[in-house]
Image (tube, rainbow, N blue to C red):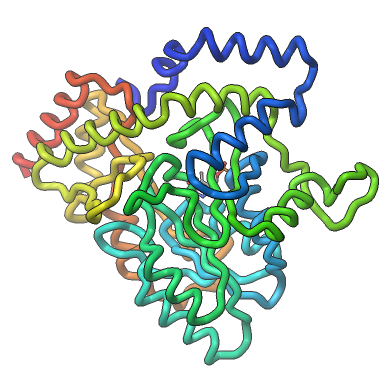
Length: 374
Ligand SMILES: *Cc1c(COP(=O)(O)O)cnc(C)c1O
């Protein structure tokens, strides 16, 4: 059994993928070939945004969006502490300061009460300038953007939706990557919509931001290649990856449905562990299916038990960002009890659209057998 099975999907789309890649090899258009533009059009249509810009990774998508907002030294950017490192890393790369926010106990997404309190605290301290919020749609569930956008408006902050894990999800019929001033996603192989290497995308409805991000993506180059209007990156998505994504986008909705069917079986049948909470009118992309044990000791023993029974598991994330080596001294006085308890208690079960019924049943049986015994 695999935690993530990329091969079954590949065998399904293989003839088309190989035909597309061969056409690119024959054309020699490896950089910014026509598949890139075609993908950007299809993605805009899928998420219902005016503008889409593909790029080199989810991290670069975040970096490009912060650069387009001119985030710099002295600026404060509010991020959850319970997320992948990149969400805060890009803030620090630009010399700005990440302010770590607590998560909600049930959704694992940013806690709006704590967010509001921390924005007020930073304003009152009057050292840093609050500029932006980066809510993360963790494990594929869209964050609470109704409240987040109200808070952003109140304090005049920009919002970047980190949708690296949620492409294909929706909330009240609005798709992931349609929230906030800019949305970013990742096509890293383990994400719900993935390529065969690194890739990412940015989405916005704001023409001016789109034009800035377009410049930043490729060395500040405008129409004339040798006139550099600002600093930028080698931030392109490869033509080959765009062609692969075009094939994967065709089956995404079906795959999201399959992920939800599997998640529903898990949630119905798993006993004695806390299964994911999905608020009403939300469809998660289930990048991960994560459960909570009672405490860190129970997690250790259940992971050993499942490993012994050849059931692969993973921990996202064992160490919150404010406890990471690079941040822990500076942030030693902050207290994020829910984040810390979650990092101790959480683990993820195998989740991909091609899990077999027998595998799902084995996983559930092993968990129930273990938790019944303790
Ligand atoms: C994966 C991920 C990223 C970074 O994406 P890459 O394509 O690996 O650079 C950023 N934020 C979150 C929440 C992620 O899960």
